[in-house]
Length: 284
Ligand code: MG
Ligand code: MG
Image (cartoon, rainbow, N blue to C red; front, side, top):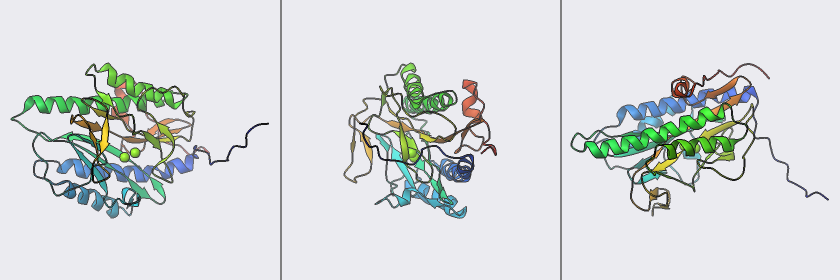
């Protein structure tokens, strides 16, 4: 006798549903562009939050972070030893700070989710800036390595392996957060399946047309151990070393892959891997 398994909705989307995710992806990208342009010494993360909010609401979308129970902001802004889920505050950014910004938009019932890291210039501490820029560069590279792997992967585990291999291959001994992972995305910001940033024994979900996932490596200079601050949101490293977080929402379709949260579909980021993104066509 076989066990009775609960039925669940397919994680795979139709081409029309994937196309509906293009606009929220582009709105998410525009919100992050607005934030990126403002990052400088003295700017508060609350000001960055307001800039992202203005873009998202101005384009007729909603902040999906504000739909997370108990969270009132449009972005997460994680500074220095904070890796993810930092709450915007009235504290100004300082020279040499490394800050990761995460945001998402919901438009007509579909979601985008993306993140980037920036280092605030500091001419007086070139070694610190270089160390943090290298962390961000490797983390972003691991994101693109994962996205490139998605173009040919049969299972999501190959994406996870590509992310880890890129980080390990940099040779810095960086830690990869284990307790926080990427996810499916669609009608909800967070859906099945999980997208690990490290090798796991399970091959993971099948990669085939209709899959839409947010890939989001979270990488730290030191040990991967983290804790949640007293604000009940902010995830910080136990050893106090700096973190970086990069993320894109990506669709797999009949013609290939398309990075929904990049205006060029990921062309620039994927070029070093020899992968060319393809627009989501009209096939049904
Ligand atoms: Mg995110
Ligand atoms: Mg995410």
